Length: 131
Image 1 (cartoon, rainbow, N blue to C red):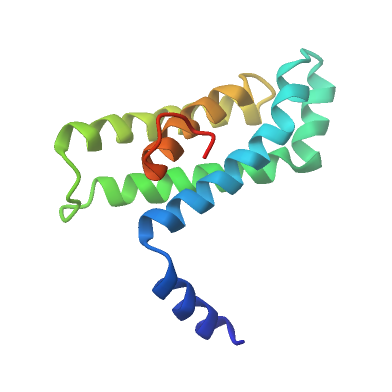
Image 2: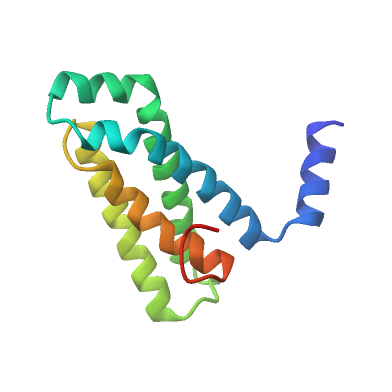
């Protein structure tokens, strides 16, 4: 199946909300895979090694997702309630700042996972981000 046919099929079988949820689940799983080791050490060299071993890619994916969400949230046509949009834009700003800290060898990856989980839960329609 060609890529364009795959995209058409995917677009016909998944809602935008389901696509957002699926992408955020994948990215959050990638972040979680590195969180314990990164957050469990204060050794800067070890942290930088973990960044090079895949964490940097997961952080980049997460940042790109939140940047895209923020762009959508601040667009004039966004139909979400104003208060919710504002809260999500604030979360996006936190993700931007905190990602910079982690990329510099500081901060905690778990904080970014903790931001994503309630959003996943909201996209799922459940009370937790496990779904």
